Length: 258
Image 1 (cartoon, helix red, strand yellow):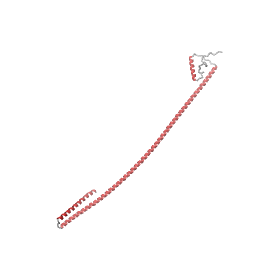
Image 2 (tube, helix red, strand yellow):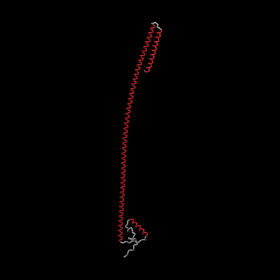
Image 3 (cartoon, one colour):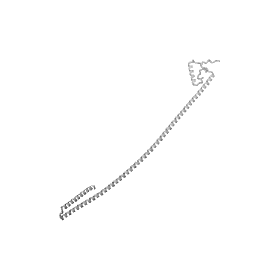
Image 4 (cartoon, one colour):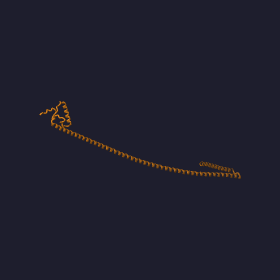
């Protein structure tokens, strides 16, 4: 039998493992491949490695195991990514719900605040309207009272004025009546004085005429009697002139009053 020539390549049992013999993770596989590539570049060309059938079966099983491992790791990675995505979506949903809740609460607070402000505004307007209505009624009441006071004051002044006018009228009527009565008395007095004056003048004239008649019928009297008669006559004439003068003055005064 022919023996296999000595393998000058890298045996599976050597310290350096290829990517196909390495059951490690992907990082180890990549590191091994990098080392193999460097050795291959630095080493002289090697002769092909002959593998026994058992080695091919083991290699196939190893490859299948590696494939299953890669699939498992892929599934785990996908599951982890899916779990991470779901967790991220859950957190995003929670964050979104939290923000929506905060937004709703904020909007609710704003709504309640606006409702409170609107209520306070309406309440303030209501109170302000009531205050204005009270002030208007109070002003109207004061205006009515003022007008009533003015009306009573005017009535009182009118009454006082009428009373004064009546008093003045009565006073003037009384004064007029007294003046007329006085004028009548004065006229009567003047008429009486004039009649008396005329009577005295007539009596004096008659007396004088009788005296002359007596003188003509009788003898001349003594000188003393003649002087006494002359003095008495002068006195009577003087009284007559004074009475006539007084009557004329009174007549002028009362004629001016008429």
